[in-house]
View 1: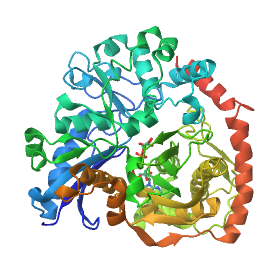
View 2: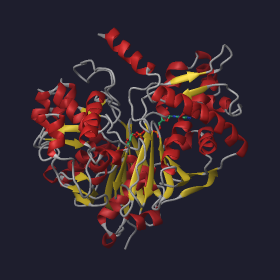
View 3: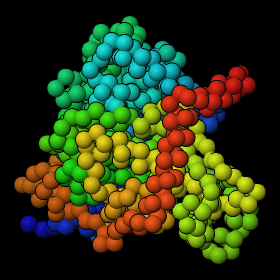
View 4: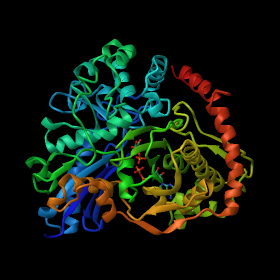
Length: 559
Ligand SMILES: Nc1ncnc2c1ncn2[C@@H]1O[C@H](COP(=O)(O)OP(=O)(O)O)[C@@H](O)[C@H]1O
Ligand SMILES: O=C(CO)[C@@H](O)[C@@H](O)COP(=O)(O)O
């Protein structure tokens, strides 16, 4: 049999990328990135210019299709591989990134009559405007003693499906009414490749983002009725659709999409997946004890376990949610690279930009180099990493960032370093929450853009967590994982694999170089982390709700 290949397509926050992978050893033969033409829509709607409210984050579904029709042909062409040897394709996506579609599977925002309503668009994972609904979901679920709450660390997030659906019902009942189904974007894109008659939902987003359980299904109609009588039957109506396991073949590539993507019709398309979850086999992790960090604009922390444990603020524990046969645990930080980007774009003085430009480097790299000259603790700064709220362990999108310890001598590189450190403390909170509750964390695996971009950041993470960090050898780990699932959907008989464990064992690699904790740094960071923890609890656990009061005053001032 000639060499066989699969394609993985990774849908990130700002761009989508396709990777063509050799199935014999995981070699990434070609990759191509398509930035989303409309990027993140968080100020005004395209065309109409309608202004969006604070905390909104939308996307344009057409951008996702553009990734398929630009990046997929590009990798096929660049690789020189015969399309007949490409046997499968898998995708992974940010999540919960959801959209309302009509009975034909068309996004409601494509309908000229509905396009001016912001609720007809894709709500991106970091759309945080459904917090009121999330608060009520939690209050009502707690009051009713719903058994699903512990599976989600005690709180359902405003980033997830039910809160977003309820926000649409509350603020745009006409859009809700005209919605045939609410879909995860990952399932929608898969349906566009396989033909909309066959819309299937993947067990990963259903489990982590829509409160679905392998044995119990969705929460009861009574629960939804208690939220709002209009939601009573939502799981049989607008959330209907078969939920199938990761690695399942969702269908086959249609003639029309094959022509647009430069592939052969009929190849296996795997059910959708989530970026962070696909990264786990992508980095070769198929057993417990190894926490995988997908590090980019945000961080998702993924871990396998053998028993269901309660862990404060985790995003969820889902049976078979990452690797079949294990409980998959997820936690996360909703801004990491985004915080550094904010500082580079909004906080850096002109002399730094000029110096970086003169030295032919970018501002991040300039700041990293200068920040590396400091020892842990030497800046005198301490920050809370809540620029986009706190996902784990507090699960509160209404918290904000904080930097303590400024003086007239504070330098930009010191601020930058304090922000890197703050995100490491945030990760340490998550590691401790798992480890101290019986879900062991022995070592860390890192993938995503950040480990490739910033060595200082990675050393700080090793020192703050006092654990060795292995880094994925792949530049596109989620896409590699997605390609593995594409190969599993195709099956061993076609030159793919029969299960994800076999695929990961053959195709994943980590770099030889690892980041090891440096004992003297560990000791200083331990003291700083204790200080971080005090601030974390003081501002995050209700002792001083000043951040929330400031938000309320801001809202009053805006209206
Ligand atoms: N040298 C750097 N050091 C730290 N962060 C960086 C650096 N360069 C870019 N970033 C941040 O990396 C993030 C993008 O990460 P990446 O993994 O490429 O994207 P995504 O999360 O969308 O998949 C941005 O938030 C950006 O601010
Ligand atoms: O929340 C999840 C996964 O559960 C992510 O999709 C979300 O944080 C976005 O990740 P990126 O930072 O774009 O890689």
